[in-house]
Image 1 (spheres, rainbow, N blue to C red):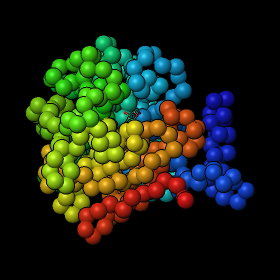
Image 2 (spheres, rainbow, N blue to C red; image 1 turned 45 degrees about the horizontal axis):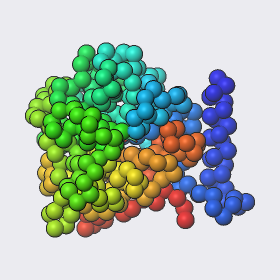
Image 3 (cartoon, rainbow, N blue to C red; image 1 turned 90 degrees about the vertical axis):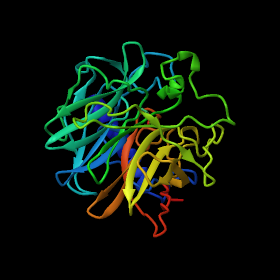
Image 4 (cartoon, rainbow, N blue to C red; image 1 turned 45 degrees about the vertical axis):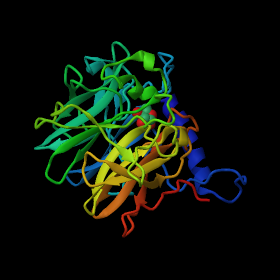
Length: 354
Ligand code: FUB
């Protein structure tokens, strides 16, 4: 209860600051959007409309000590709490924990960014966690309600690795799982096809070579396994050449998401240490995707992560920042309207009022 009050006090102060331009110092940031909830830190929002209601599957950030020395060690989340609302701007429900670390037989720590899909009245939660050897894997848990509770499969998805699963349901019902993240997400340790810790804690360290690319695999009909070996998603420039490892403004870091608009597939992702959500477009869910620009300018906080969803004919960007805490590992979910221009470009969202 004390902790809840403390968070609310921080939240009130931050919201007051955000809504008040008069009397603020010249350098104080003015945030364009308000956190959806102020009594929990929910990050990495993956939003969907299920059964006419908006559900947001995110990481539940907590202020706990790290348990290792790896990059990303401050993110020690132990459960998932789903948000839901009947409309954008409506009251937000924070549901009871839908899945807890202790209920995932194979996981040892760090429940990072999840996503979900629905089929035939069943709901499937995809989530990364470190296994007993400290290796990120991706698990799936199922339930009969969108907010859970979910029951985890006893083992991670065979052949899965790294972080940030995002499931895309194409118009024909086929589900594709995108995943991967460099640095703390360990993607650089999988270049040989098996886990190699000697590949270090960042990336390939080859700025002139093609960057590490995200992965995609079609899901099996029961949505519990990969129907194929994961393949690389090629991110290319407008000459068709792969984005290079040293191209920090455009190369993939983590936080894949795919949506389809006007027949185009949009692959959106975080550029990590350059702090944007970028986008690339293609004609197939497998890519290649050609880099186009920036969806979301840098937010307050080191990480940036997002999802894009249509709600009653309008498009929305869900994202997170650290407005309420000003601490990298305590993030809050926000939502902004998103505009696709007639030529397919996405209008960049600025999280600040300048
Ligand atoms: O929340 C932990 C990690 O931070 C996510 O998996 C990344 O996408 C970044 O947001």
